[in-house]
Length: 110
Image (tube, rainbow, N blue to C red; front, side, top):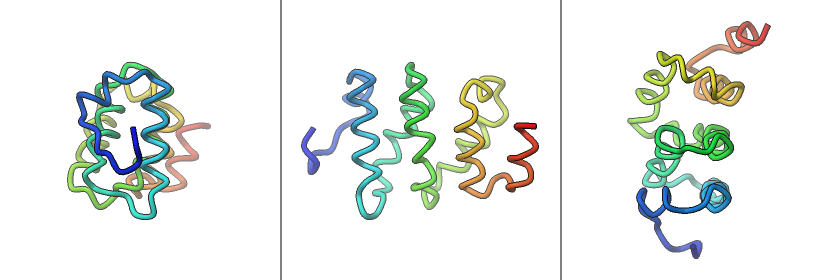
């Protein structure tokens, strides 16, 4: 994928895990996160099958804090038992987004 090309969610999910991680990292390196790119991070976290891809997305999801769908998505995930499989990056993301305090974050890992 060239840096100026857009990739669809479907196209993204067809990439290998390594290619998905590269796309997510490159998009995050842009000066200002493009809110349209949020869907790829959302797909990686919600629909992705590779744990490393999910972690790559969670490490950078805070870049989209202005996206209207981000906090609802994170709060829905927070209610699911499967979010425990995404630790510690899920809680790090929640902390970066201000959903949980630093004190709450520290208490999760005691």
